Amino acid sequence: MNDERWQDIIGKVKDGFEVIENATQDLDPGPGSVEFIIFQGPLGKMKLERTTKPLVLDKRAIGSKRMGSQATVQYVYSETEQTHTFKAFRWAENGWQEMEAGDSFSL
Image (cartoon, rainbow, N blue to C red; front, side, top):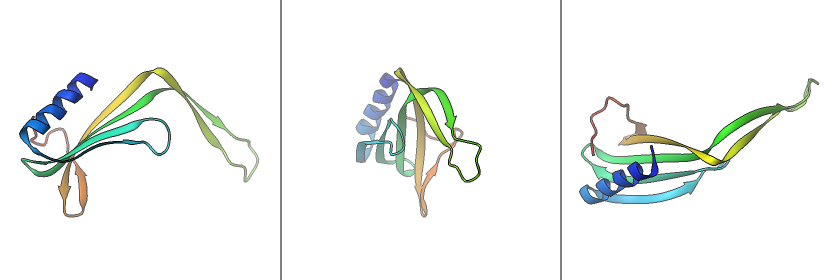
């Protein structure tokens, strides 16, 4: 999902529904950010989330073959290319539940 489409969705949500929260948070492990909007929608309380991360170019495992030694993974990220992930959630009694692509939801 590109930036223009995301801004179009955010605009439609703000025009058509009561917005509860709209924020951006940095990802804790690694670079990237999560932008989300929580609103009162047709199926109750809903959340749309867009995760933006740099593209992973390489993944290197660093460690030794000795017993008890620790292995680590080092990632090489692109400085120019980004990946975007879009998810929709619905509030249930026990927390946020991710909606499947077949669930009825349209903007």
